[in-house]
Length: 93
Image (tube, rainbow, N blue to C red; front, side):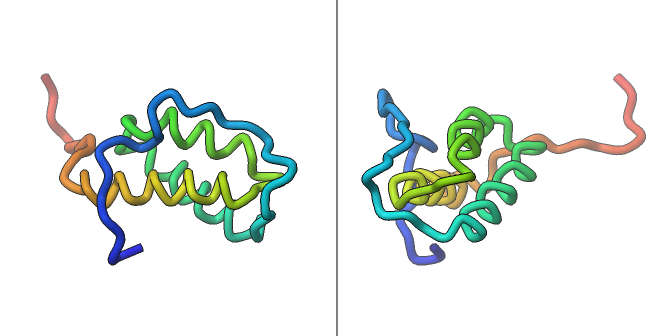
């Protein structure tokens, strides 16, 4: 993924996710690792929370369609690496 082009949004606008029963199945362990890593990232990147929620719905039976959606989120993160929430310790407002 280090040579991939960044994208401007984490999911394709107006795209409808589905079970994709006829699609080519992918390794569910790898898909769960990617989705889990993205879930961990939502602590500091709330802009990807909706996309990660959609991706995590299909962890039991993922297809190539779902893996491409997860990779799109990774491409979005590559282009927006300077975004995020920064928590400072000890400051009061």
